[in-house]
Image 1 (tube, rainbow, N blue to C red):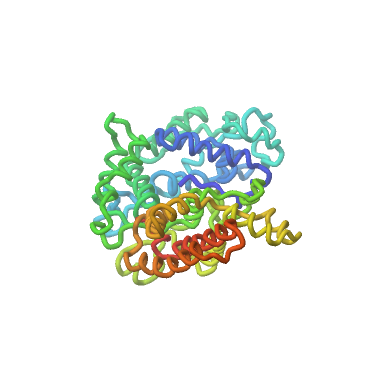
Image 2: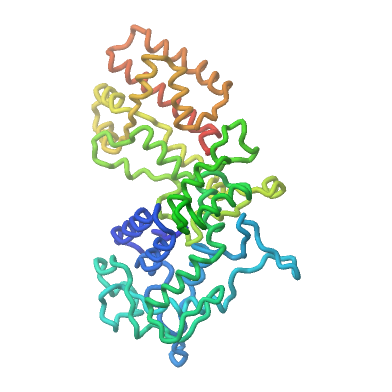
Length: 450
């Protein structure tokens, strides 16, 4: 929701970007107002959306406040483009029969003026407004601070008759800006819909959304915007907890490629054979902080085809899932291998070419599968993968197909007496389990979150 991107000119500024990620992490379960304020003053956001170095109007010098951040803080971070009812439906103008717009171009201008005068902390005033390349990277990490000579001190009318009085300081103006957005009635449905769509289902019912909005507006302690309470409401709502047979027909969402990648790596404890962290060079088609713009990886209203449109449905994640990304992401899990498996094959072929391969070799921990195979059989292995990879969505027929295909191969490998060593047998069993994992990773069920 609060997007910055490494496609911006953040070269060599990993600490700055990770500091921004820490800001999101630190406030994820706190109050939305605190999160909004910290994001607004973070220099990474200031650079990305041009609030940093934004100065007051000077018509003689043809300077006007930059409107980039003021527009996006309303459109993408808080209130959106249309006035909303508390169930997320748009408010309709009776005269025009069209949705009522949340703000106007004049509102954007007033917010831009109210947010002038912020720059990197503790810099000489003559640097204000200069390109950020004139400031050493280590001086770009602290929250932005106000420079009053560059803050526009005229009166500004904000949304819903909030006013920044003439002569107000940059800090005072910021607080009014934050309050005007935090207490806006759109904020609850705007944030609730975003969280529900990303955590649970792309097409939530209005009743589900209204219940979460009520918690955003006031949790059990009467606090507005308490994100821990809101996330709990999202995840424990009756609509979110229904068993699969009871879910609405179009319930759920498509998994982001990055989330699938993280799930896979965590489940199998992925690492490097030589423990050199080279496995971190593997990247899915969607990468952390790698969005193309402030609008993120995909539009929350993306409709992939006419069938979706006719049903009034959206599938945002399908905007970044293409034939090319499906193949490239599948290649990252196509060759599941274990440390024992690679060690055996290296003993067979200790060539320079194989040694070079080991430098970049990725290993997976299949111990939970091996243990179940030994104690309970292949059926339990498939049940385990179904639970942790596909959330128990695999059909009985699909599980039977997998069992019928892999069981004879595994039984033959376990019972055969032609292996040169037990290490050879282990390597082949690991290879078969890797193939089983790959097959499940290619199922539609692995790409759905329900």
